Length: 32
Length: 483
Image 1 (cartoon, each protein chain N blue to C red):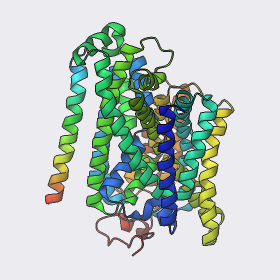
Image 2 (image 1 turned 180 degrees about the horizontal axis):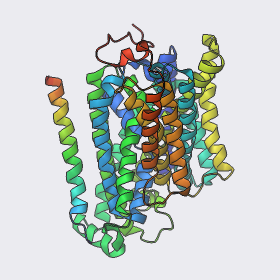
Image 3 (image 1 turned 135 degrees about the horizontal axis):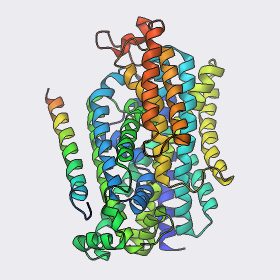
Image 4 (image 1 turned 90 degrees about the horizontal axis):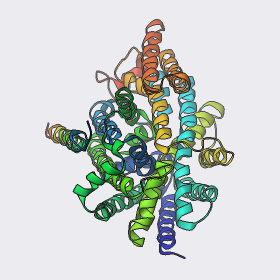
């Protein structure tokens, strides 16, 4: 596959998703 | 003197001042090696992020994208996953008993001075390799800013780094790291829009990159097996390298560790992504460089305004110095605390230990630059050396450290076999194995099998050694922390 397709934009989405999940876990852990 | 040179002089003055103030605050070895173990989430997270983000990020990843393409970016998704794993799984058990160094943890958990000695030796050797990679980048920056030969730059940077690390210990490292992280974030945040504007905005950037170097957006410049296993190397390395694990001991409690690690992860991931984008601009602006490692310093001098360019170079320097200073602490403590005081001279007086601590840092700081000046280890892409270091550390420490706090039955013999076997397998693979699979895979698997197998056939550990690390037991008071 050529061109800045999913490989390019997907990286930003993936990083944001992992960080959000980490944050959600942290908030959940602190409320526990 | 040019504006760039002035910015650097100001930068060095701040760094020295922090080193001096830290020296005044350092009272004992707990201060010197883990900053008293009382850091909050901001400084604790900042020092973790600054340590992680190295010249490998600012110079090396741009180099790899330049030569091998954007697919490498995916390797870095493993880093936030790894830090989440650290905060959620490793830290709660690992920090139950606070130590000064990672080899000291190995002695406590595996009830053996020998295991501690092996861990210290591994940390020492791997760290020297890693410092070399960073210092090479320092030479590059010195050459651009001051016009001096790269060898002089490497010597000068080493001298500056040694000065503030030796006098101020971990407290100096933590505060200089915090300052340096601010410089890195500022450099990246300010440089990115300017560099993108130079190439005509975001949409034309992508088109231009593709016409200048079509391979950048192609999947397959690096074999998928290599990408996946490089990701594994970063994952295991982010979990198990001593300079990161000792930062967990530096923070004051578990909630602080969670917040600090999250803060660090946001900084690391954000910086990585911004640096990637600047790397793409470099592909358009300088399509024919002999080495991708030159791309970032060139963006700083030729694309940005003089002040911003100086800030960017200071950011590259900060990335390098904050990582090396932390490694100096790891290697210096391995040499003086774990090897000298623990194995050779256990009865050393307080004053003698004080000198040995500082001498240890000077010794481990001088070796890499001496090796470089004599021609050893030159000419590799910075990020590949970083990855090799990460693989060696991961192959020796990941299993005994993480496994050690989860499997009661793991024995000292198993830990020793796992460390030695893991690092040997990684070395052999690096030298003779196929390049399409990163050395961390055979290293990690060998380490896991030996640690597990040897543990099963050797006598179980004494209950008092493992008790502090397992929830059913009463946690012991933390040695090394002042009441």
